[in-house]
Image (tube, rainbow, N blue to C red; front, side, top):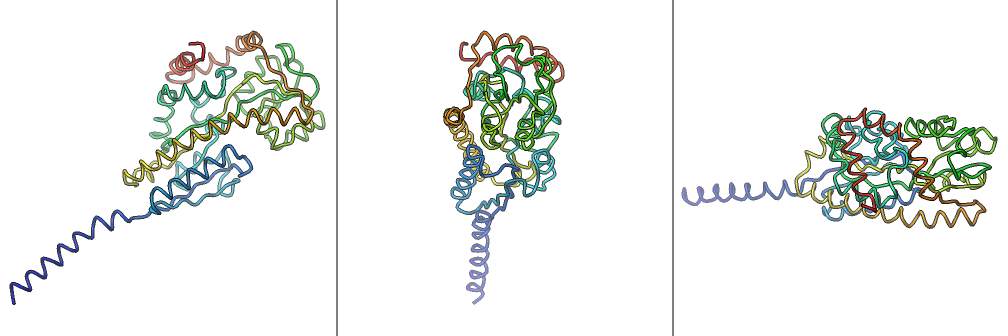
Length: 337
């Protein structure tokens, strides 16, 4: 009897130990995803939806992601702080908003730096954000970058006269988004005034502003085709869409789940690059159909504008560690290299 009893104890202990790994493997994680962007911004929103779907499916339910959009939890300027503190787990930051805190992010909105979104993609693959941006976010703000994708480029909207040469910037009041584009417009001879996209329509309609550099998506979303006559394509700047997660939450995840999230983030980046490319073609056609005249600046004019705004680039280089190395990668990944 003693032998049987002893065998039962050993068997029970063995079964108990055998259950430990399966319990750990079944551990689930609930993540809160917050973005100020609305679902109407499809080329950003659809990749987010697919990212969430992929993570939940490939983790077989071990990861659940609850998404809050349209600024339900935090606005664009608040997202870095919110994910840093752990108030939210994941966010999709627009690069201009945290660039005041992390000046290196200004690389993406320096004037006339990138040829197009394909150029940005090549620069990212060459390690652009690994020169300090990713490390600063991780070490100083407890934020891990999962991926980075573009908005469609900033182009020039004008109320009356087209922007076709350097002199066309002068004598106009320009609605700008932040310090980087305001400085560039100032160097081009315009008068910048900071303004949110929500105020553009009425400001154009009432003649308060003459022009603005904004993505094509903004113009469609804000119906600027009703109050502007011209759009000039020049790839003035390309803002970024940064998918990021709280570092503490990231470190708490098992390696297999981290791998699933990384893979889904890479797919999200690829999808957004593709969607942006398709959107640009479609948006130009929409503007033309609505009576807006679309102009393209020739390379020699863009070179002239680039030279005029070079002081803004030089000032940025001096203010950021590894500033010149960032510029080197951008120059080395141009299409003519």
